[in-house]
Length: 57
Image (cartoon, rainbow, N blue to C red; front, side):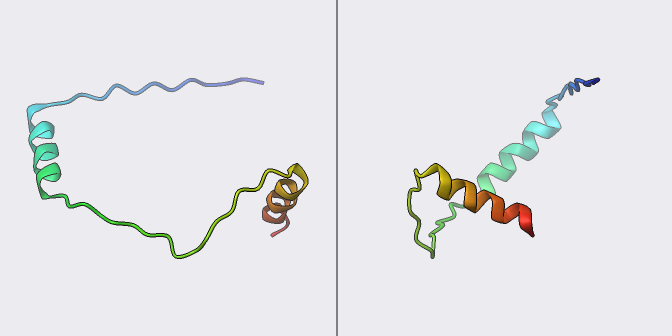
């Protein structure tokens, strides 16, 4: 089995830095709230049942 490795070099120019600064200045805080409750599941069988339901669709 062959695998490939990918590497990307990103260059940060003065123009990109200026746009990043403008984006940060114009951004606003977003307050996200969950509308649904949640619960911790530690039972391995329950976790497997939940995960297998995604594969059945």
